Image 1 (cartoon, rainbow, N blue to C red):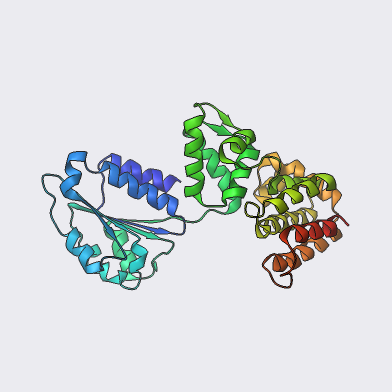
Image 2 (image 1 turned 30 degrees about the vertical axis):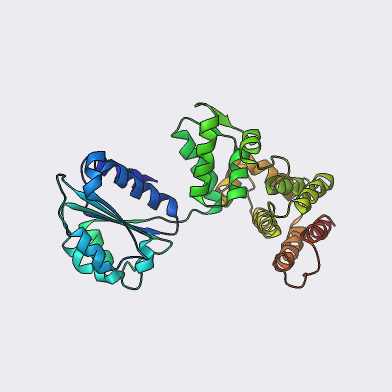
Length: 334
């Protein structure tokens, strides 16, 4: 993210602000900026007297301000980091007076995760005027694979489209979890490696053959034998392959097929742009469009809505996940 790079670049140049208010739904970038400040603003010798860690559940806004107003000892700055600052959401407005006149020798970092302050209010305006307000937005699922590629590219690695898709399917949009797994792979694999589906399977434990990605492909090809093999694997490993996730992915897939059916120009480039998918997967979608006419796709979407409810235990308490998935496949292929 360019904004994160700019914040880090400014700190490197010595352009350090007295307040960094880091807020939003995606904790990964909040942690990244906060950790960079903790590790780089002060030297190791200066940190003992001048770096303080506070937690929102344990302190008041008044106590934070009191600590922020202290002067550094034998250093240019003191750093005060407030973790879980969102626990102070009911009283955070009390920070306004300090935000208007912050201590110039203090770097106050507030990690306000999973929430954000009202941009129309005085606190936001005061923070913007005197410091940095950074909003970390959650990535959509179709953006995460590109994020993985960008992160690895900056570290001299590449990743195959299938391997990236496996990580997204297994770990969702949690960038911190994905980054942790990428760090493990980097320890094992030398620089310059292209991370493959086999690497993901061997080192992270995600099956390259029995996953929702392969199920979607098998269904799109109308390969019932392969699809039922995958479903049987899911039935034997329900904790690693929750039905809710499978139904959600298939619903998204068939909704996209409906979109393609409605397009006048089904050129692969247009499909990539309209659906926001990797060009690598376009042929898979085109195959599915040929195998599932629009009327059938509409029926499958309605069926998936029905099974989404069942997957959550409504009206199907006595039926196992495996049996529900088998019933779903029969309805899709018929």
